[in-house]
Length: 428
Image (cartoon, rainbow, N blue to C red; front, side):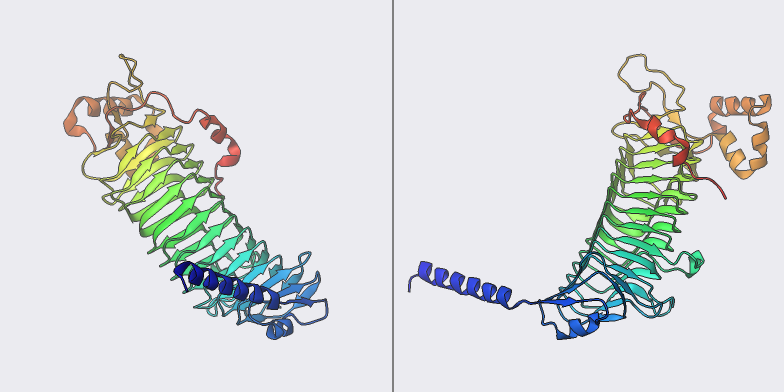
């Protein structure tokens, strides 16, 4: 037999096998009053279990590859005990349900939907996961997809006693896309999880929008994170891409970069937070094209955060542009400067760049950080004289962030849209 005929024969056999598998896949239906678990037990691998609209109180365990599909959004309640759905097999799909009422035991990690180790390639799509301790607990799996779900926690629990909206531990290749998460402890908790995508999620009314540690090669894109204590908290990580997120109205920080290396933080809006960017022990990162506006502190920079490229950003109308804790000047703005709304220099040659460097802090700023009550004298002749003397005599200069050629105009022409009161956090 020639090579072409052999390949054609093998292709025909493969198509026949695939067709046979399709023919043998069955659809089992569950009506109100019947048991979903019983239908799952009867199903063969690859089958679909369709559940009609109604209320079902069960704690499901799925231990074979199948699709569990809700028709007209049935409600599955776990009765406030254990996990509402526990998945112990790969290639499972759960869609179209209201899944609610997990147990409340943090030690047992009760969740509305729990993925056991080895439950690879599971898809959870288009569900409402509500009154959950953990919305999803996902551990030691690969290629999980969590898409377009609504996830809410046990709102009557104190924040410290709640679980997280989505918990990822020791996972690879997860896609967390288009979910709405609120009233949980942390929106998305990521630990030792790599090569993941977090895109288009909305997270509010949590402790941290994301709580993130020891994870590499992940992408955060197009998320909206607001009205939390902290927005995006990226800690002890490297090779992150953090782009086009909107982080606003958080009562502590917008984006925390703590012990972060080799990452890109670009084209984000960071508005109306207590601290816009909190940068601590972060090196070899690129911060470009971000709009940092209306924060009490635009950037809090400390703990040897150096060798970062910080350019083409707009720092506008922050009460304090930069709070820098360091022993030597830190130069930003290479190869292109940043825009600073409080820059008092000039541009004689009209090239769009200031002719004198921007200096973020001086000796007076440091005195005010150490003695906050001195702000009462901020506009007094004595304080203004001290500021002038510090500028004239370099020996009195405090280390600062310097931008040699600041941009005269902001790159974000619509920045005023982020100055509305709704985007600012309110202290309780």
